[in-house]
Length: 85
Length: 148
Image (cartoon, rainbow over all chains, first blue to last red):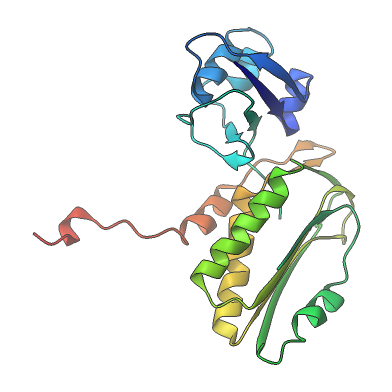
C-alpha cells in the first residue's frame, strides 16, 4: 500500500526533501515501523530519524503516537517538536 | 469562532471589537505574541495547522464558557516587534476568558505545527512549554488515594 510522507523544518532540510509517496513493504503497518524502515535507508535518514531523536509524528494531520496504524492513502508527517506562538 | 493562519499582520483592536458586539459578552481576554530580539522565519504545516488550532479552540470551549474566540497565527518572515499570534476569548465573565485564553496559548505552543528558524538555526522546543501544557492535563489519581 502507498502512503504520502511529509517532512518539516530541520527534518526537511536534513533529508533534502519535503516528502514523497512511499510504497510500504509488507509488515510495515505503523508509524514506528515506517520510521524504522526509513532509518534503514542509511544517511541522511539514519541520522535525522534515529531512535532518541525527538521526532513528532502526525497521521492525516492529527498528532499520532508511534503505535498509530497506517492504511493506504494516509498522509504521514515527521517533524521536530513545535516552536510556534 | 475564527481561526486564521496568515502571512499578513493583524489588527488586535479590530479583532477584539468584532467579538464584543454580542450584548451577553462581559469579558474579553486577549494575548498578542511579539517577535523578540531577532528576526525569524516561521514554517508551518498547511492543513494540519488550521485543524490543530480548531481542535484547541474546541477543547477550550468544552472546558470553559467561551462565547466566541479568535485565533490568528502568522507565518513567513518576521522581524523584532512584529506581531506573531493573537488569541481573543469572549465570555460573560473574566475567569473563563482569562483561563481559556491562557489554555489556548499553552496548547498552541506544544501542539500546533509551527517551527521558528533564526539566522543561528532552528529554535529548539522548550521544556517550560511542555510543563505549561502539562498543568492543564487531568490529574492522575495516585493509587494510595483510590478507594479500597
